[in-house]
Image 1 (cartoon, rainbow, N blue to C red):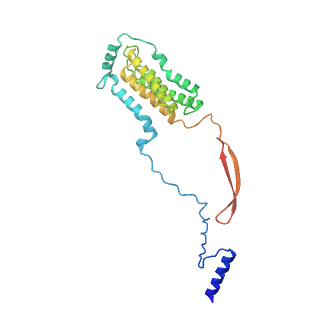
Image 2: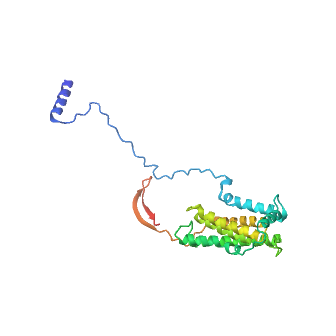
Image 3: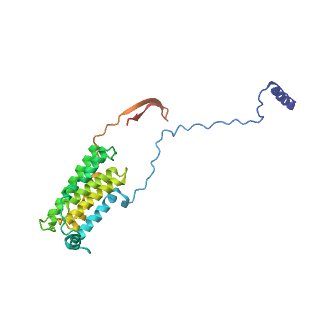
Length: 271
């Protein structure tokens, strides 16, 4: 009798065009939504600290340290290739050549910095912050150079005074070149290459003009680069930038896990 009723029901459903449900269909109940943990703050992921030799300070000081170290090593006639050896070889190539071009080229990298900025190339920092870094770096360089000059009292090759070590002209030129390199290295490395080429020319001319020993210009280059790097590393405040204000605020009700209610606010910061 039961099979007859089931067969009759199926036949009637087919005649009326109605879908036939399976005899043993399972009803799947959706899993309950987890609302207990949605407001929990995820645990912070531990990040392994960088090795000390990969830090910014080490990367910024390793090249200047090598240059200053070599200058100190060859200072006052030391080293395997002494100041006197270098001075003799230079004046074999340029026995009578003298020029004042080194007094002009020390600021040529700054001229490059200004011309590139005026041409529309975007620098790493805006003009105000670049000037602040330059001012800080210049102070570090001048204080370092003249302190060492008065402490070492090395006689110049031409005997004009006792302020030979290190070379202030070279330090100035390499500081400016480092500023150019740092500001435009993301755009093109050629800006820095050009500036460092000018700075190297200043160092060579100081020796050709018989104003400095090799130890003076190598140490001066290291001090100039180090001063620029310290100027950037210690520059934390960003002056002259517009404040970022909240825009596009939205408010919506919020339900807390314990059964309470609240109000949440979201916004987007303007650029």
